[in-house]
Image (cartoon, rainbow, N blue to C red; front, top):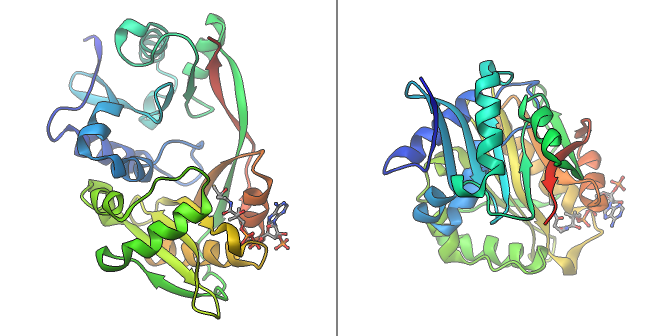
Length: 288
Ligand SMILES: CC(C)(COP(=O)(O)OP(=O)(O)OC[C@H]1O[C@@H](n2cnc3c(N)ncnc32)[C@H](O)[C@@H]1OP(=O)(O)O)[C@@H](O)C(=O)NCCC(=O)NCCS
């Protein structure tokens, strides 16, 4: 039977989240995580559904993609079809041809696991390696060192604190408590935790969200930041340790994160928290 690509209908988003959960495993190549959908959910279920693409054969979900921005598709496949030629050919056509409704014409990029066959097909059509990213990972078999910040877990009542720190950490961030509450309506929310770190003066200085994919599977940090007025005091390291401890409590096998290699401060912060650098990964890009 032919492979099809679709936007999820009602209920289809949960199926996509479930597939992404199932496909996470220790040692697998870096790939989109249910937490990425969870974080995208701050824009609402409708926007998330509009940004998701699902490839199927015989009703079975083979691949899930998220348009994370208008021209970036982040996509992964079920582990057993990473090298499936029919799927890779179909996905390549779908991302190349704008009329398929996956990516717009002109400048575009695809993030796919480095071992996916799609990685080999797109360069034959003129796509080239994009900006390098550095994935990092911390094994959670052993307990994590205690952070030297007072950590508070965030819920609906104090989500404004988390939102304030995020806006103070990321230039151009428009995050609001309303977006937090919207995010909390998403299916991945049940597997997430939001933390804020307070310094000795009681100021909220650092914040992070963590997303589990279930017990025994890798979890991720997304996003993590320190308020710009409070950098350089070890708070990035502390909130990273707190995030790893929260994922350990949720049963995650490791804590992972992916950051542009050019974000030297972030890479240094994760390494300072004991995270191990993995080989760089690159998007595949098409010029305008
Ligand atoms: C990255 C960030 C969290 C660092 O926060 P911070 O509180 O200043 O970091 P810390 O003081 O805990 O420093 C941790 C380590 O990183 C190093 N570091 C921090 N900023 C650095 C920089 N600009 N260049 C090089 N190293 C840096 C520190 O020297 C320290 O290393 P050490 O433990 O070996 O001494 C902060 O700059 C930030 O919020 N940036 C914007 C958001 C962001 O990029 N988040 C990560 C996205 S994945």
